[in-house]
Image 1 (cartoon, rainbow, N blue to C red):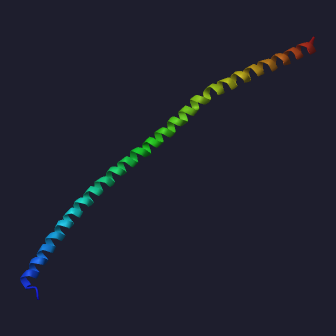
Image 2 (image 1 turned 120 degrees about the vertical axis):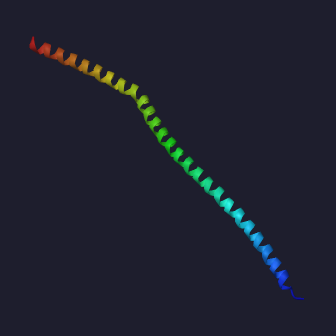
Image 3 (image 1 turned 180 degrees about the vertical axis):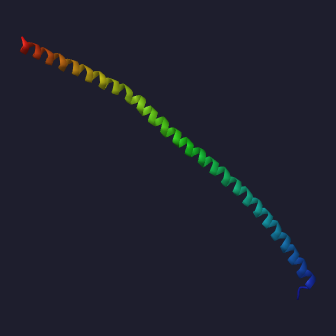
Length: 97
């Protein structure tokens, strides 16, 4: 039982239509994937910028937290310097008399 040339031609045409439809669907999927890729690239750029901003905020916050202790260190240094100066002045005063 041989398939006639006409039947074979119909089968080939049907297969060609099916393949064309599948290729069109794949083209559309590739376009959508490309759009998703572009969107992800933009999101990645924004995330990178947010990471930089967060790092800067953390640095600033650390500086703010450290500032009171720096002020306290200055106060303690000033008090110690004053006390040592007063003692030294007193000793020098006793020696000179």
